[in-house]
Amino acid sequence: MKVDAEARQRLSAFLVTHEEPIVRQWTEIAARTLRGRLTNTELTRQVRDVFGALQAVLGADSDGEIAGAESGESRGALAELSRAWARQGFTPSETAGLVFTVKEVVLGLTESGQAELPTTDFLLLSLVVDDMGLFTFETYTKTRESVIADQTEQLLELSTPVVKLWDGVVAVPLVGTLDSARAQVVMEKLLQTLVDTGSAFAIVDITGVPAVDTQVAQHILKTVVAARLMGAECIISGIRPQIAQTVVALGIEFGDIVTKSNLADALLHALRASGVEVVRRASRDKAF
Amino acid sequence: MDRVPVLKIGEILLVSIQIDLDDQTALQLQEDLSDRIVETGAHGVVIDISALEIVDSFIGRMLSTIAAVSRVLDAETVVVGMRPAVAITLVELGLSLNGVRTALNVDKALEILAEAKQVRGVGVLTVRGSDDVPL
Amino acid sequence: MTELEEPQRLPIADDKDVVRVRQAVRVIALAAKLPLVDQTKLVTAASELARNTLIHGGGGHALVGQVHNGRRAGVRAEFVDTGPGIADLDLAFTDGYTTGSGLGLGLSGSRRLVDEFEIVTAAGEGTRITVTKWAR
Image (cartoon, rainbow over all chains, first blue to last red; front, side, top):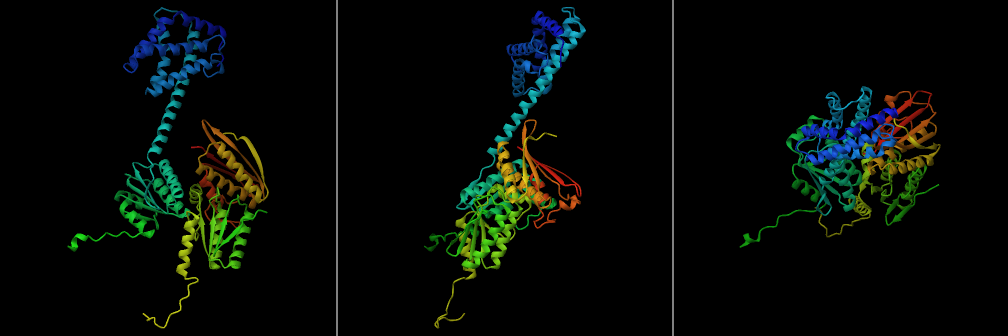
């Protein structure tokens, strides 16, 4: 967006002249929607920052474009603000609205005769502010996305423990809803543990999993087949009745995969298969 | 041309693939191995693929063929050390390596081969003494 | 469609070239920070497709490089030959179908290993297969 230099200067001068009433009213209007979440001082400071950014965009060297290289400084300040708003939990419209409010303020000033601004200049202001609002909104979305991505990653790391049950037997107790991404992480981690510990048996316990869909069931099946290719046996334990019914209803073939109703049975199966016999010692007390 | 060495340890042939196999080298290995099984009378073959970063359908087929051929020559084949990423990829590719025995490492493969040898009773010849009572 | 950045052009004329394509794809996949499993899947797919180009297409070349889609990085590989082309695509994508001596998993299998798979072919007009794998 190329803007006539003269018009920019006029608009810039207008803003400088009326800075005090604009910032005051802007803060007042913004406070109505954001009441309680920011202190007045904080809000005034942030409004001043946005105002500063607006002036920088209109500044002498700039071409009036917020995304342009010239306005790097104002862009930085705006980006900082919208990141802060995103992390404080502002809604998207609150964030963009905070910027757009300046139009309402200037319109109010001219209508009440406190200030004078030609219509063309007001349109120019409107264009620049729209640009800033869009930029703010974009930064806001990016920040939200990265927050979500970080949380997802942390959750994945937290929720996939692989524990050793016996020499050569490892288990993954799965708790909570399994989505495709998590199932994949679990699968990779389990297989890597088999290599690292030289365990020939792995138990996937899904007692704590409320439901599975086709994709997740497929992931579990693939894990079992992959483990076999590596020379290890995978046992699935703790299948709830509902899940068993879902699996059958979805038409998923478990084939010759070993499934046990609970972890203890699965462990016993693994021990027997690896040549360990579990025997209850006869009580000596009875001999008396 | 690159050649994968085949080592004889006791009654076992050990192949450790340390290079990125091209198709010709894979076919050569297949041939070398069957020659060596006959030559040495080995009863087991261990193929270590822990250094392989990928196994595609060609190498997969080579492994299946080696297992089938050596079975005909009365030797058991065990493939060891497949990496997790390789295993996951093979499953996705739709390759199941039918008829190929696998183990996590060489130690476990040797256990499997020793067991197989016992079951087949290779080298065990029992002469019944006159005192033995037939059951 | 996103553009291939700094593509490397690799000839596919013999067995050794298939290995070279695999290695080039792995280097780029590492640079694009693909997770290990995805690297392995992509390199395996590249190996299958390069072999297809060699055996069914009578040789050709591969173009490999990084692509970007917004903030996401990815790796793209194109396999081009001027061979006989594929007359019946549905048949060619059937698991187990083969005209060569392979297992018939080349096309159908490699499609499962990548995120995007595009094929342009007609009988007598050669084949161009483009595959892309995105970083997670």
